[in-house]
Image (cartoon, rainbow, N blue to C red; front, top):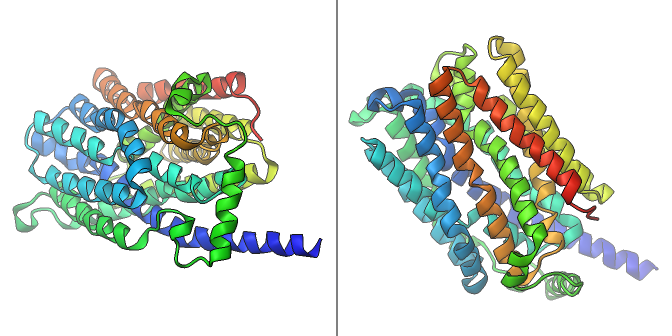
Length: 427
């Protein structure tokens, strides 16, 4: 018994060591990706006026990113399985950084659409690639917690990205003949290019390649994962495509992502609409919902792992998100109540992510995991196109953000129903 306890304790220490080595760096990478993806929401505060773009043009441009993302995500994840995580993640990070910097030269709606599309093409595969990469290191019973730690990058990007964007927009206007929004794209794209080079130096492929693990630690982690992957999971890409649970998961994720895209691309506009003035002030206040989301995300992932329950943890989170979005739209005339409601919505939206991604990993492995995870993520992320576009169109039509918020709230509620009705209990 003592040897078993010692072995379990040693394995626990090994997983902690792996988490401390990998998660902070992966979070850093995704924070850069997320900032480069959504900084257009802050650029919008001045860019639309400078370029004479309508809200509908902005909504289409913000969302068209996800069309490129959708088309290239599955191929990118299958390529990752063939050539490895280091080369794939380095290529993705460098190219999205360069493309984000190219936004400096946007003058027309067409150029805006093209660059946003290619930003999606080049970023495609990063998020599902990391989700897949983590399955090479952590067994199923640890993944909600690990996913939650990695996915705090959504929230951390909102916490740090808003104030940074607000600062750049407030201080760089007219410097070097660039507008403030042009500096925003340039200064936030450069770190991604540098980080892509660091991926090749820092990131090991799998446990057997980690020089900072002992041989016995490498073997223990590899054996645990090998034993788990012989449990009747679907292993081929064909298995994933023919599995109805993959398509249900994709539908659920579409609804979840609609809320994430809403708070990512429209929080600055929502905060401006409730009466906050000044780019720096908007940036600082926009961090509040994401800070709450960070706490909710980590807590929900840890609690889900401890209880072994996934379904209700996901469904309750999306229900909270729906209620928060409805209340945000209803209270737009009251700054304090609207901000509280937006914070509630962000907590629900972000809390759903780590638990959700533990569900497909429970029945997919190998090529099925690479293709299935990418398929779910790519279809789900089409909501990143649909939600901003619908909000922009409805705001252009109605003059208010409320109708768009109610639309996204309905999608979040749909996610709750789909999870409760179609997702089996996963433990």
